[in-house]
Image (cartoon, rainbow, N blue to C red; front, side, top):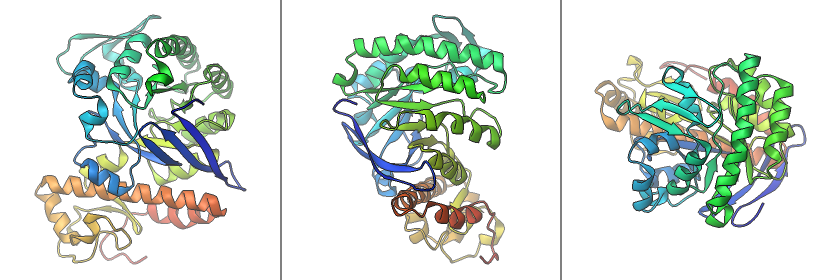
Length: 384
């Protein structure tokens, strides 16, 4: 990997493929494994950038498709690029929009050149090609940009998966060419290719080979969070991650529960993103050291205890859970903000403990401690 990006491994787990390290970018370093909050339209919903930083966030994700539709990449560029636009001075990753495009199958037409779809804003026709997607991400100005891939809607349909995977490889060739034309690493942008292949081991291996042939700064594993069950998710990344270059960051797309983290980290994954902590927070569901809590539960209405007695976030240290429940029931905006922030503190705190456990060889013990509790539903009156 060339400057201004670098990646180094600091520790390897003796009993699994887990590793901890540092991914350096022009806007700062990320201690890995790390979770990236999702700022779809240029903001992590309801959370100020300074609070994101305090929660432990080091790198955040923005969505190419949504920002393309509104306000447009030229507007973001003219406003100083995503870092200025988002008020965030740390590293940013933009996805390619591929997942969103192909999730709108009834609005999408695909050919070898690219994809035509209907705007979710006004219904107008929009054209995405690998070259357009590279140019859009150039204007957005993220540190890490993603290749445009064809994400199959059914990862168990071999014919569909093979066609999508082969097209992803052909499109990657074009993405790499346009990325280099746009300045590539000299511009301060690292391009990650995306491994597809559904749940088929031979297609995954073929995809890893095709993507890694480009010697890019990092590699992502896609198609592991498009509706399949947990067993298929595990199989998909177990097939892919161990085959990836050990000296490049490995990004597992769309992963966002404690169980997923342990499964992925043990395979050697480094980066993850998901809307889970903020979407759950806005729906008043939180992860805590005692289990998952529905804050709207009537049993919390007079509770003076902390939401999570082990958490140092503002929601847990500045408000009794009874107050938080009232904010939820009355649809106060503060409820979603505080609970989203709590979930981010919880996720980043867990990843920090995982990094420490990798370094000390205690990851299995941490998993045995954490998962039984996080998978529980905790209600008023429970005793753990």
